Image (cartoon, rainbow, N blue to C red; front, top):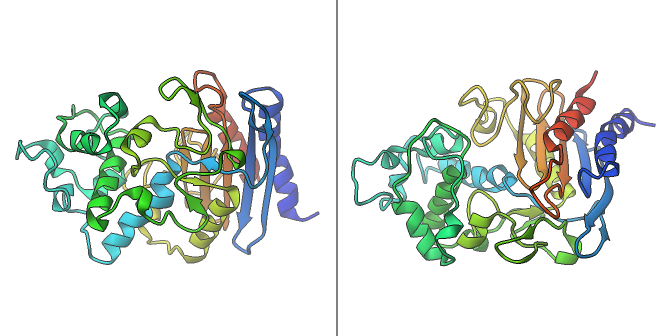
Length: 330
């Protein structure tokens, strides 16, 4: 038995135990090394309401906020590298109509880099979808709303605005953009992990985006991407192969963040034993990806922890941390 297989077997135990305890319906764990060795394994159910389907290694997941790093961050940094945007320029360089009726509004001074690092005063959450279902009207609402300024926190608004900038530059909606190899903006319900029995849309969501704001906007920069464990690990392997130490996704912007990604801090989702050269991100639906450049290893933990409801203590943070600690235990 290979060293990676031994490591994988112990790292899989927290997920298996969580499913057996009824904390989550099911999940997939995947690990890839920089030599290309890859292992994935599934456990539990992809759906339990209104009927049961087994989880498989090829199940598609609503990746939620992993969209921020797998798609939006990648696109923004590519545009910066090609000179089409300046990361330190305000968003108004692309979105001149942002708070256009108040020239001195603080929102007009926010930069691309600040949005990537969640270093803005935007609120943590905001129910944009409660203002209607017309995606064009909601885009206008986002641009013209007088946002209440607060302390810098992780905020979807940062990436919703980055998504609007992408749409303005590419002259098309996000859902018409190429999401990248192995990814999509929707998935076959029969091959997807179900998310919530949604009280707004009055159905169990499966193969369509769970995030309410993304659904109402019909595509956004903060959520909406679907993919499998293999697709995510292929993405991670490419970063292990090609990402230089000075790459922006590895360059700190704060104690907790790089450009788009998180970096290790006390209590973070990757556990206590990964190297300082690790980046990671999670998604509300129960997804996550962590890439440790020092150890040449990446892992993804994909679950349907909000199925059939988000209003339940799934223990997802503990599960993520336990998995990371098992992977990185010496």
